[in-house]
Every structure is written in C-alpha cells, then in structure tokens.
Length: 227
Image 1 (cartoon, helix red, strand yellow):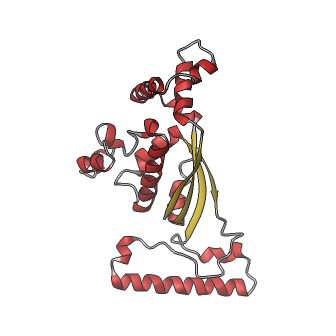
Image 2: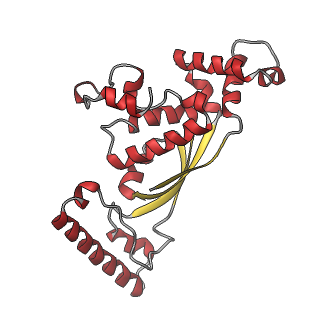
Image 3: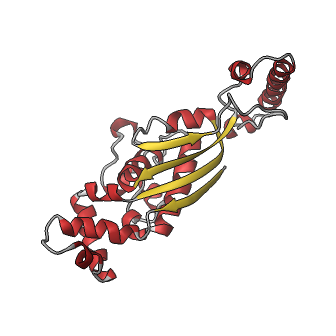
C-alpha cells in the first residue's frame, strides 16, 4: 500500500483560524490573515475543544492511494463528503496478471494461501482469454474479485477527515482501510499538526463510542496515536 499527500490548501491552519475569527470579529480579511502564528494556534485549540468544526471545511487535502483492494475502495466511497477518481476496470485492461491483495489472515495459512494463489491464476487466465476472444474489458471485468488491487485520488476537507479518522482508525475498522487511514492521519499531522493533533479513533477524546463492541484496549490505542 502506498499513500501520498498530493496537495492541500496552502497555510491550512491560518485559513481555519481566520475563518473562526471572522465569526466573532468585525476586522477585515487582511487583518484576520495577518494574525501571528501563536495567536491562531491558541484559537485552533479552542475551536477544536468546543467542537466548532464547520471552519475546518474551508481547507482540503488530496491523497494518492495505490495498492488497496476493491473491497477497501468500496468501503472508502461510503464517505460521501469527498471526491474520488479511481482507476477504471472498463478502460484499463490487465494484460499481465493483475495484482491482488491478500489478507494477512490468509497469508499465514499455508494451504489456504496456495489455494488463493491458484484461484487467482485461474481467474486471470479466464479474464485474459475473454479479452483475447474480443470480449470488451467492461464485460471481462465481471470475473475480477474484490481482492483486485486498485488506485485512486481522493480529496476531503479537514472536517470530514476528522470524521473519517474517528471511524476508520478504530481497531474495529477493517484492517486494510484502518492501515490506510493511519497513513493518511500521519501525513495530515505532518502538514497541519494544529488541526490534527488530537484526531484519530473516537476513544482518544473520551469513552469508546463502540459501546459493548469496544476492543477493550483504549490505553494501547491512545499510546499508539500519541495522546
């Protein structure tokens, strides 16, 4: 899996702080943007503690992701407040054995691992034979499984990213999207540490929101995410 931060709103923390100050000040935009860094650092800390997340919608982050399964991308697009551009199986035909993602639980089981590889060999051979016989890629793709690797570009605003990290960094999230979410969070913290310092699974800021389904390892989770 490869996760890259392709771009983000320039000076995201300054933009968020200016938007927050605008709500409570009659100062002009230029004055709001010229505030010293230590001032908007305090302001961002305050608005995050108060849950004033609407101002985070003014900044966005774009990621490039490669080497995730279609099973993972199907979960990802459930986050509707985002933009996605995904490699098409209709227009991009696999003329070499397509890469497939193997869950660690299968990889650890030698017999099942071997059967997994054999199955994908058979699937690819059928797919390849279909293309050779003139079957359009948009129809041949019907045999491709959820494990087929994909790549995409996605853009989310900072508010939606907080929501995304709360759900997908949780240990109850599926392992693949959880690994992707953690990589995204680390990149966001590097680019805008004030905005994402306390972002992560829901239990970082209080009781576990999973209730009876809690993983029971809140202390470990908090240590993992540095809070």
